[in-house]
Length: 116
Image (cartoon, rainbow, N blue to C red; front, side, top):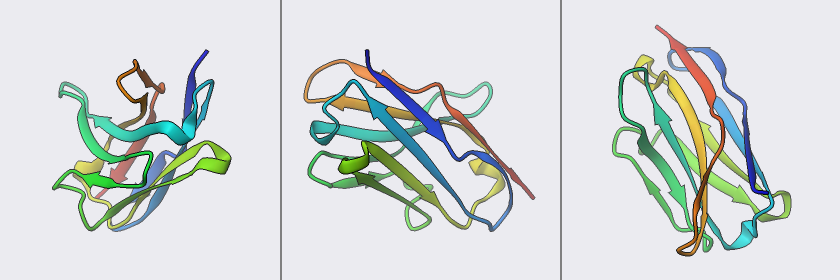
């Protein structure tokens, strides 16, 4: 059974930083592309950042230069370092994992609230 468990969300002031973590089990983590998505109430879920099994990264334009995705295959964990947070970054953040063309897996999400 594949599980993705996010942590690290919380309340932070605008301009501050948070680091999200997502630990995976039941998946060959080193072969998985891992990603972070986010969703605000009443809006569609959107891509934040992705890191491939080879370490190649992609970012949404809105977070590029502020957020950094990284992975530690020894710990089966993917991170999202979020700096210079803005009120519009307030969302529930979801971890996503996928091995090759297999099924996608999602975590339950962690809420990030940025106060202005």
